[in-house]
Image 1: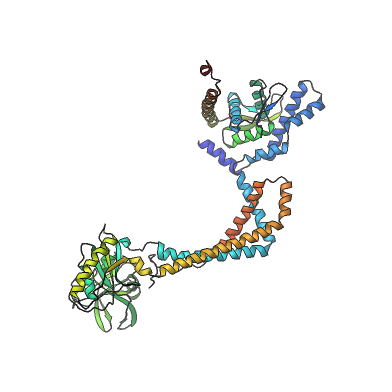
Image 2: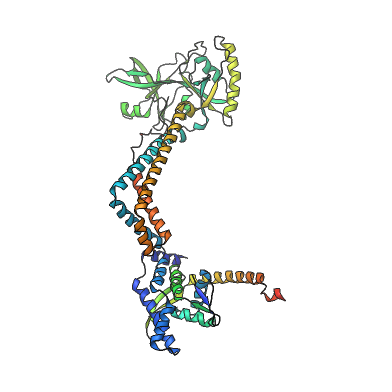
Length: 124
Length: 422
């Protein structure tokens, strides 16, 4: 299942990213401010400079999963264009989770970079 | 931590409203269309592209639903309901499977209950692990009866046994004479008997060594139930007289309720063996309490020396005479152990056959239900889901089968002591 697709030029290259990565991205996005689902998807796309597109089919299951775990909570509010929309905001438990996930991510990406020889210190 | 738990619990019981998700998805779609229109696409084209991008709404909804904690519980309940309906629709098959399982499981439960109480549960005596029974081994089996000279030989082994006591192997009937004649079961014991088996004395005392000697007087110890039934639990019973066979016996003590003796007894009387005897008849049991740390092997080795001395003292005995001790349970259970094990093996096979029968029945049914599975697959049921459904049905059959095998529990001794088998 493609959770995230990376877009590179005209040849979209699909890469299966781990489910946990999407959770991490959503938590990080919601840590800035409460947002509705559409907003989360847009924000991830913008911040990644169109490099990451979150598929709707995986965004909402992920949001529901995070809500069921108590890391984010939802409420009905009105959107920018005065339309009723469901907003998500991060909970204190979610912030704690985000910190541990980020630490784990740093460890993992540093290790992978070392193996691939992409680390500036390692390559010089 | 607590709020997180509460959130999870809340969602466990209250699912989100279905139309909430619908509205949320619709909002997403509208935003998508609006974004595409803003990028310069015609309204119709923007809508088309947005729908293509969005993918299946139903699928997204399904996946959201699956995130719910307790999702598996609701599918399990669904499978259960469906299973009950399916089984009800074919009563013949269900009855056959349930009865087969009930018989298989029931037979096993019955035999295992016996094995458990006879072979597995520890005897209820405080030092049950250290209590051994004396016997004379012969080529085939051990004769667990002893004579007075043998008892004296055992009692000499104070380095190995802290207590040695003799007791009747069958309770002779005694007749209480007087106004309300009644036959009671009484067994003769030596004075160490109560200490050895850890019998709790709730009133008075047990026999003194003097009372256990010849002409020690006519004294009797009562069991709890006899005391309750005959004397209505009279606390001033000690020192009163009980007339047995027209002879007055003085009641010296009462034993607590939880003590169950083998053989069963209403009253205990002292043996009053003479200190020296040449009567080589074997007519009573002898039990011993091993000193802590003494193994059965060491006791048996030591006893052979005693047996040699015994033969020198009583030349009329066989020169090959040997003494032997075995754990009390072995002497009680004896050859019954083998029969029970064979029985247990047999009923296990019966259960195996029952399971094979039910498996065959299920297999035959699965062939018939092929069409049903094909329809469910076509409707989108995954292989795992169908396997789960079938497992749930089998579980339902097993549970129903085991519900039907309830058999009356065997009557238990108050203390949980295995019923005596001899």
